[in-house]
Length: 113
Image (cartoon, rainbow, N blue to C red; front, side):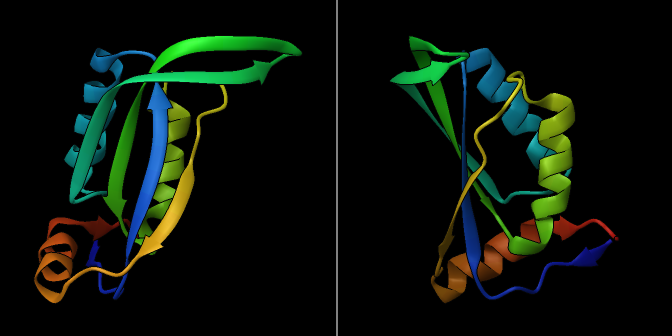
């Protein structure tokens, strides 16, 4: 694995249905060094259409601090570990302070390929 050297940090958001699922997913992401930090925000209510039905469900949001080069590995991790059939994967590029960016990049590695 090579060290991540991108200048910017990505904020990737997803949601799950429980705090236990959020913690399990966060731990898996961190154990694979695909993020420097995962913040967990419980207490959301999501309204959405699924298979033509209006749904209203409690959810927990995860905000994942990652790097652009980690995207393929994060998507693969979501495919195997995310509890939803179609998980939310939204990316917002962010400019980090020098110290935070340096710390974050040191905590992640980009899988080869």
